[in-house]
Length: 172
Image 1 (tube, rainbow, N blue to C red):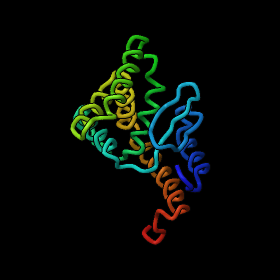
Image 2 (cartoon, rainbow, N blue to C red; image 1 turned 30 degrees about the vertical axis):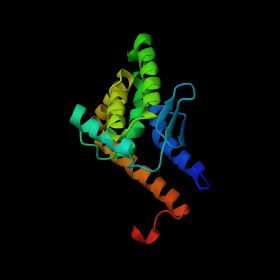
Image 3 (cartoon, one colour; image 1 turned 180 degrees about the horizontal axis):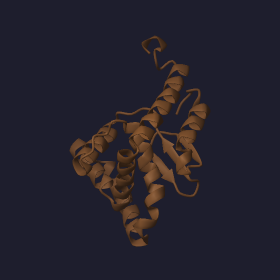
């Protein structure tokens, strides 16, 4: 991710926020994901890509839930993969892997409308639905914890952005 500074501190702070979920490590990358072997969540610091917006739109439409903190919902979605894996079953898991490969290949040549359709197919896969549902249910039943997670994340992200000159300190 270039020559930006402060990744180690940011990773430590986000890892600490995710400790209650038994996540061993959080690492800043260019995507959200969950690694089962390492019990690691990867996250991105720049929100607002079209895929992020489609995910929020998907959640609103499919789950009738207004996402107040997209960064937190995305983190919780990855935690949801950890917490719902056993519900999935081997056949469904294999199906999801095959579909993700297909979607990834089709995305290489897709236009905007095709990309949106493919992203929604991705969001609708059984493992993704389970993880998203887990995240939303957690958020609905733990509103205070979600607010605290957001404030702690926001502080960590602001320090990271300030350290890299990406945030005007006077704007606070």
